[in-house]
Image 1: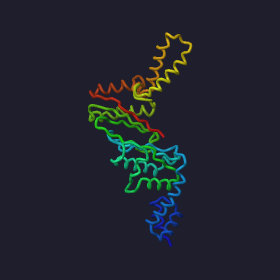
Image 2: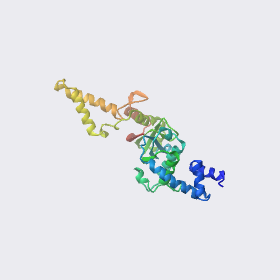
Image 3: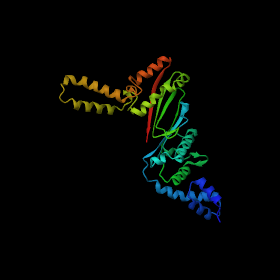
Image 4: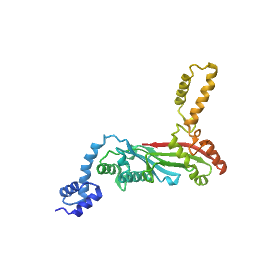
Length: 290
């Protein structure tokens, strides 16, 4: 006879159904540890069947982003928005991001391929993932991760419409180099709008130099085709004007600030630099979306 206490214990630790727990204990002489292993083995079979299903939802998970000098971002996908908001899924995202953040002997960025040796609470990451797939019933994929760290820059981060304090479907990171990190860290709240700008306006690059030259060439070709009936001696001037407008709308520094359209992001940053007698320069930006 299998006690309900053992069934409850096994169910609480694995998330499996009552019938599966009862069978697992029956097959393993009421040995809970052996029953967990048995369920995992059965779960692996279930999880493997789910590996080919499409994952179009998920979260971007930030860990330790309150430091603004050293943190980690992980992108994890699932099948439905319902699961993306599930506490078990969100807890896994947070725990995984923490484990990546604290592991020093891996690349600063990569995919799940770089995480083969990762353990979460002394358990292989792949086993943890398999357990979660079995428990939730959806395919889950670790898409990518990136670790941020700098002694001469600060990182401004933003998560849009957060599912919890660290996870969302849209997240952005802006790196700002400075000659005084301590003073720059005091300006985080003022500078937050720049990370919000990246999430809201999705600029193609920081400035003209960071936009792919092919994109600019293609834009010139499009403009030229639109000027078919314009006299040749006026085309160059019109092309340059339209191209300047394109760059203004599609570069972070050129865009109008979302909270004050009378200012550009560039002039806003210059104003803060001047008011605080500090050097601030945007050196990189990343936009994460699901």
